[in-house]
Length: 190
Image (cartoon, rainbow, N blue to C red; front, side, top):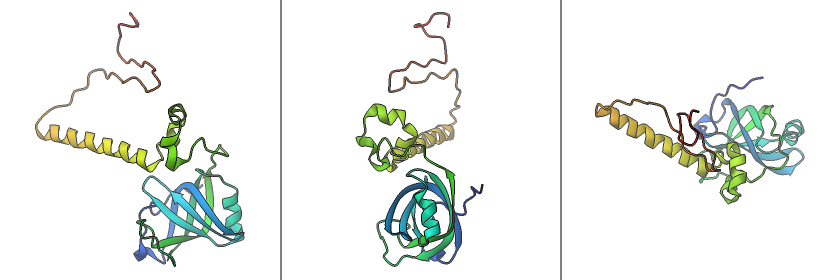
């Protein structure tokens, strides 16, 4: 099983045309034109890349997986004939020479569309948090929070503050669970 990639899904540009690359990500969607032509959107943490399936063999592999399955695509980068200026990778596409299924999604139908997870019921979003975090809007907030905390920590260290962590108390989770890592009055002696 080959999982190594040469680039992420937001990295390739027109200057990369002609290169042989390997991308790994989630199978987001396919627009099928015929039995041997389809446009696959491959997504990873960094962005998306269009994969152009042009053979029946490759289409058979794509037909065997469902949305959010993890796949590895090896192929050649080429310039797109119809460019999408709204996407960073909108000037290129990858024509696969091989597609490997790394992990098949167990759900034939997702509990919610990834890009519209915020419209789903909160309990469903929490149950499938790993899917909710793939929504670009949700992910961007998690990334922003991480960057803010890193900047705050760097600023405090620059001012000679020392971070000392005594037992960490966790916040209650949104569904109301009570998680304690230190003794609590609610449970004497525990």
